Each structure stands twice: as C-alpha cells, then as structure tokens.
Amino acid sequence: MTQPFYVSPEQLMKDRADFARKGIARGRSVVVLQYRDGIVFVGENPSQALHKISEIYDRIGFAAVGRYNEFENLRIAGVRLADMRGYAYDRRDVTGRGLANAYAQTLGTIFSSGGEKPYEVEIFVAEVGDDASSDQVYRLTYDGSVADVQGHAVMGGQSDKVDAYLSEHYTAGLELDAVIRLATTALGQDTVTDNGGVARTVEASALEVAVLDRTRSQPRKFKRLPDGAVAASLQG
Amino acid sequence: MLPEGYLSTGGTSFADFLAQQAPQLLPSQGTNGAGTDLSGVTHGTTIVAATFADGVVMAGDRRATMGNVIAQRDIQKVFPTDEYSCVGIAGTAGLAVEMTRLFRVELEHYEKIEGATLSTDGKANRLATLIRGNLGMAMQGLAVVPLFAAYDLHQGAGRIFAFDVTGNKNEERTFHSVGSGSTFARGSLKKLYRENMSETDAVTAVVQALYDAADDDSATGGPDVARRIFPLISVITADGYRAWPQEQTAQVADTVIAARMSAPDGPTAPLS
Image 1 (cartoon, chains in turn orange, red):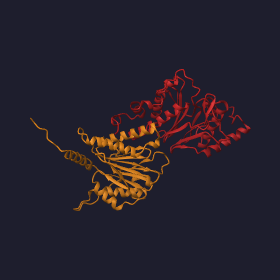
Image 2 (cartoon, each protein chain N blue to C red):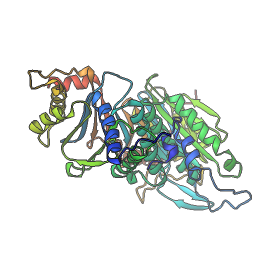
Image 3 (cartoon, each protein chain N blue to C red):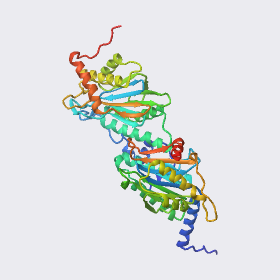
C-alpha cells in the first residue's frame, strides 16, 4: 500500500509562493507614481490591444502584471463590482479600498485553497483624491496581501532594480512630463547588472501610459495617453 | 471575496449582468400596477432637440407634474450618458430617470470591458432594447419615452433618435420633440429651424420652441422669471458634451421673453 507523501503546510505555501513569484518575474515591470495632478501608471507593453492598465471607475484605475487571462478576469470582475455598487447606491460609494478588499479576499482564497494553482498576478488599485494627500494606491500580491503605497511603486519583472532607481530619483509633486520621463528611465534599469550590464532605452511606442488626472472636468478621471503624447513627454 | 458570477466569463452588457445577479434592481422590475390610480405618479413633460452646424443641442423644460399638480419646478430631464451623447426623458419620471442611469452605466461598462466605445447606432439600439424591456409597464400607463442625441465622430455630425414605447427607433436628421408639449414644440421648430445654424441660434430656437410648448400645454413649464428657473440646455459637439451655464441660458431666455412682450406668439415666418 502506498503512503501519500507528507508535505508540511510551510513547504506547501512556500512552493505555491515560489511558483507564483516566478511567473510574475517573467514579464516586464509596471510602475505607478503620484504626480502633481494625480496618479500615473507606466508599463512596458508592446501590444496595443491587450492592456495592462485600465479604468475601473470614475476615480479608480487598475494595473496588473503576470498572466494576462488571470488579471483580465480580475479586472472584469472589478468593473462589474464597481458598476454594480455605483448603480445600486451612488457613484461616490465606489471606493478603491472596497475594491482592494474584494481582490485581496479573492486572491487569498485562491492561494490557500489546495485545489487550484495560485494566480500568477500582482495588481495595483489606485484611487485619485481631491489632493495628493487623499490619493490612495494599493498593491496586491498573488497571496492576497495588501500594501498601502506612498509616492511610487513597482511590480513585475526585475522590480527591485527599477524600484531602487525610483527610490533614489523620485520626488513628490513632479509635473506629468517629468514623471513619465523618470518612470521610463526607471523601466530601462532592469538590464543593469553588477558585472557591467547597462540600462536600456525604452521607446515611447513600447510604453503603455495612463493617468488618473484630478484636474479633468469630467467625473471620469482616467485617461489613456496616446503614443504621440508619450513621445512628446519623453522629449520634454 | 468576489462572487462567483463576477468572475465568470460573460458579455459586455451591464443590463444583462444586472438581470443575472440582481434582477430586483432593474428599472422595470417588481411592480404590477394594473388598474391602479396613476394620479400620484410624477411625469416629465417636454424635450426638444435640434442639430446645428457643429453638433446637436437638446433642451428640456423644468416642470414635473403629478396629475393636475405641479410636482417639481426645477426637475432635470436631460442627462449626459457619455462624453458624446445625452438622453432627455419624458413620461414616468421615476422609471425614466432609472432607465437613463442604467443606460449610462451600460455605455460605460461596454467601454471599460471592451476598451472601445460603442458606435452611435449601437448606443441607440441598446437604448431601444431597454425601452422595450419596459413595455409591460408602458401598457399599464407607465410609459417612458426618451429622446437620444449624440455627436457621431465617424459622420462628424449631430444625430437625434426618437423611440416609441415598443422600442421602435426613428432617426431625425433635423429636429424632434417628445412629451406632452411636443406637438406645439415641433410646430414651432418647424418654422424656426434652419440648416447649419450657429450654436447660439440653435439654443434660441429650442428655447422659443419650449416657450411655445408651455404657451399651449399646461404640463410644460415656461421660463420661470420670478424664480429664475430656465430650461436646461445640453450641447454636444466634436469636443464632447457640455451643459450650458445657467447665466447664459438666462440671457437667451430673457431676450426671448422681452420679444414676446410685444409679439406674444413669437417670431413669424414668411408666408412664401
């Protein structure tokens, strides 16, 4: 008679976490930064059709890295949740915090339930406020943990190198053009190595950029920047 | 935790999603008013719309009636539904406002899920479907008759769509009106409308038309000079939706009223 192998819960969770982390590190990074008029998402994404960054609601944006079909599923669920809540109550009752909580619980349940494989995704949920101090950015990881982010954050790809560059160069209250330039330079840092690898230049056409701009007169603050506008920002 | 239905694959329509997940929230749900007294139901009255050189203008009077009583003097009956469209409502106010809210979410939901906006005809067809969903209520006397106006980015022109309670869609190239005072407003616009008017001229024409509707229809409110309540004007051009500021509308309304002091029936058209 065969005995089932015993795997300790610690080992099981570690294996699942390693699996998810590997999947997430394979792609390119996405950064989120606060600037003077709101929040900007910058990601490297050669595809014009498959977005990593999208609108959830009036003041709420979404960015993700990892497996496309998994985060697309979460994005659509988020849009449904937000639209349902805004329709049943009022548009003001849709909050980034509520959405981050729903995502956290969903990711957490999938991660710790034995049957399914964990989602290989990381997510930013950002909500732009009336001023910079009321902006909220949440970072959600594959295991359902949530972190409140201030100023700037990176996920996916070689995120430590990009993050190190941003920590060194980021200051609060930057203009949009400046912050897009900073983010683009930071994204190119993933090829830097101790043994002589140098930063690469990321072209405007390879970037996906969107803002939550609190100065927009419409109730919907999310706006995707076309390639031309991104190129203009990069030239400064 | 996100409920199962939220994570499942599905369509792009919010109304369909609502019907699956929370059918009690649909505008036409949960009432059976057969044979009931409708005198306590609030009705919105007259909406007019006209195309002009750069787009389309829509205006609504501010009166809501409940039987013979004026229920509200400053009701809003024209609502933006996305950046390039708006809906004006006549008929049962409660259902119409809810349907417009649903329509707005419907357009936005599609845009967010698909990453592209619906075509103008697609939007009008969706609205027709929502209206048809209310047919049961309409047959019991709770009709909703919206007027839909949009700027079509492909055609580069303003467009107007009218509907009946069964969802029959009817495009008007020039001008149209719905609601209790619509007969008079249409007659008025027929004489005042010109091809390729300027925005200010188009606004003046619709304010004149609403004045004529209020003149002959007891349920349509004219400009309320004492309370300074004037029609709500929405303009949609290639730059998107814009509501006219009240001070500007007040100026147009004051000019119209001043002219009516000497000619109460308004401007006259040449005989031939």
